[in-house]
Length: 48
Image (cartoon, rainbow, N blue to C red; front, side, top):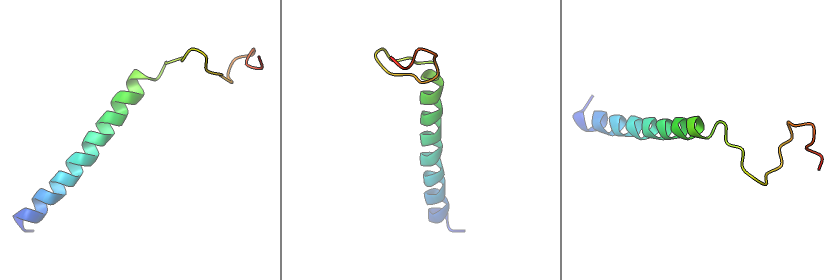
């Protein structure tokens, strides 16, 4: 495999890895967020 091809493949893999890490970070830090004023359908009094 030529060196240029390996560099391009590594670059593409790194971009996807960075995106996956960013999504994981965002999911981790927003997993218990309850925004004020939003309607949640998992509570008994959600029909207000």
